View 1 (tube, rainbow, N blue to C red):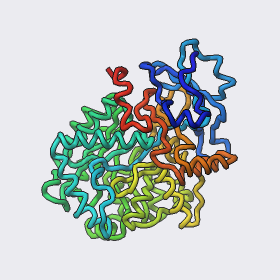
View 2 (tube, helix red, strand yellow; view 1 turned 180 degrees about the horizontal axis):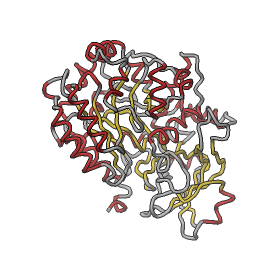
View 3 (spheres, helix red, strand yellow; view 1 turned 180 degrees about the vertical axis):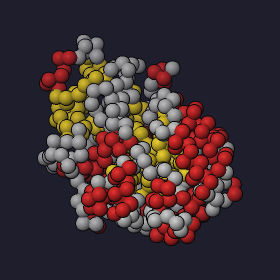
View 4 (cartoon, one colour; view 1 turned 30 degrees about the vertical axis):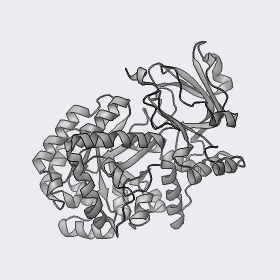
Length: 470
């Protein structure tokens, strides 16, 4: 093996010309650093955390993890010509998984409004109108994915606009970069501007064509995406039921129980249904791989139904606080064993950073009397999300055979973070500092399928390894 980088224990050197991205054209490489992965939820299993203070991660030519563990035990397994990248003062974790984000809202993030419904009318819908232009959709898709990768997010469940060309643009760019993304064209045939309206039939046809083109094409996965119950007629929800039956391995994503005004509206539109969630359940959309954004104003019947169906609650704390929607109840979710993940919900959410999302999730939990540990937050953003999505054999882990989607976290990314982490003496305190003080600056590098796709200080690592893609 050959050591291809200066030891990052020398922090001045690491802030200078040393690069975290592997310069070699191939994907086979080894990384010596602190390593963190999970085998179970640390809130439920004291042995759920896998941590190596001096670890070695080995990635094969196919972009999959060969093995990971203690450097002392594994380094003799390295072939003599395997590049070894030493960064012992940094922490490698699986790539973050954002389970709820809107790519057409990238350019209207941080737009003021008095609540969810006025925010949609005054900001969101006009911004999404622009995605009828395929060139605009392609431009934003490229920027959006750059932003995800800069924040260490290697997989996201993404809402496109109602225009099929928006989903086409997102999938095309994601496929070109060899990323594992989940996305879908929004379905919306009422209670929205005419310029954003599809029909039950066109929505079915467009979604079906996109599923056939993109679901499981390379690393791309499709999500059937009715925006939320008020913007779909019964006929469109029936079309969703048909598609969900026809393609039982696709994902489903929508919004539920986010805002009290929205809930009252749903009750008026669907008076026969017991609850907002029951609207979706009536159309057989509450099932495994169904991701429901927010889930704030649930009762225990809703939560138990989610748990029974193995559906997923995507908690979006920055969005919930920004729009004043309410506080997610972690204790009630745990009591009913409802599956919980984390989402940024950009542009209602105020940051692409999953670290900042953890920051706000911790505070929301504390407001409800619940302590959300840093270990659990990192689990929810990695292995926990992958398990909820049924993808834990592929992503969210450093285990052998997984796709090598991982990030390099730098505890010296900012002067304050460096000063704080120099004084921590256990893993929980280190992760808590990352979650409460970190943002995109803490992401030294991001890898997808074994290739470096972002390096801090550069807008994108696409140019670094352009020869690899070709």
